[in-house]
Amino acid sequence: MTASPVRMISLASAIAALGAALTATPASARTSGANVNAQVDLRYLATVEEEYFTDHGHYGTFHQLAHGEPDQMTIHRGVTVKIVHLQVRKAYCFRATTRTKTFVYDSLGGGFVKGKHCTVTKTGKSGGKRTGPASI
Image (cartoon, rainbow, N blue to C red; front, side, top):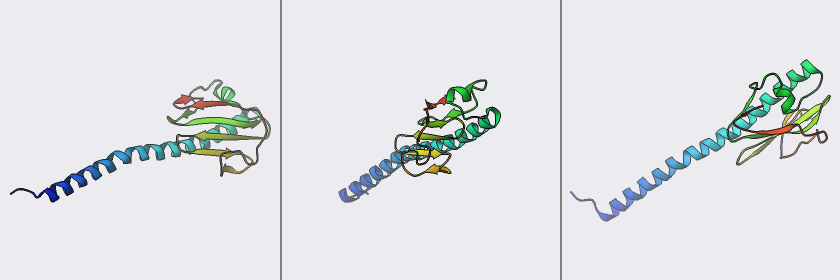
């Protein structure tokens, strides 16, 4: 039995659509994964900063945080983290970027804040930048 030309075109269209859907899914999953990793990196960096503050009485730059424990934190692949503002005895603000999103963590703002800029901690020196995969 031979298939009609209409059925063959329909079958070919369905296979092409399925193939496109399958190849699109991993890219969107990677993007979503990088965005989750950026948030994880910021939360963990905040924890590291608070531990550093407890031990040293001030917040640290990436260089200071890595002193003595270079493998303490790893920035995930596809994520760039910057210590945007560092008020060594008071506050810090971090920014993480991926290909599609920017996340901001402001210690005086209560953690994650909306937008691409620090909302409360707006002054202080830069504490450095790291791009994953990298250890601070």
